[in-house]
Length: 127
Image 1 (spheres, rainbow, N blue to C red):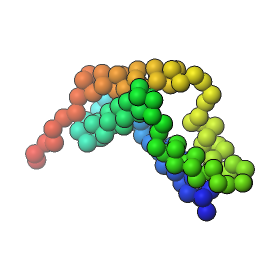
Image 2 (cartoon, one colour):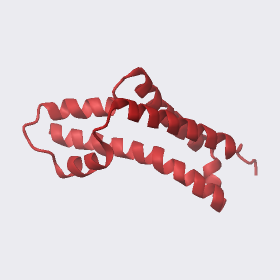
Image 3 (cartoon, rainbow, N blue to C red):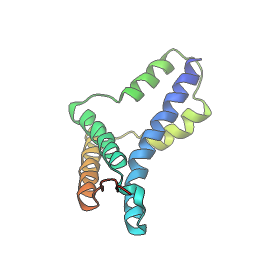
Image 4 (cartoon, rainbow, N blue to C red):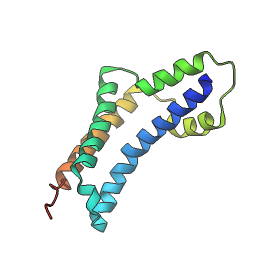
């Protein structure tokens, strides 16, 4: 049962990463294609908040809660990695020095902030 919960957390974690990275590209493409949803304040500020949360975690040296929960759940398991863990884990986790990740997260957060300034959200139209 722990493996199922751990896999569920891993899928949620992947969704979070997809929102942060994919959201960035959606904003760029949406600005070029004139998609109105990319100007949504809720979308833009939640996108910025998500990457700022990751950057702050990295700067203060705190592990991501989703990673911690998954590790705890997998710690009691004698089973090998499941299909979901094996493939999503390969996409998301790399063995590199922590400073590389911190630099990447902070740089990406700054880039998302710049994008917020260059392609600003718009107030809702009152039609």
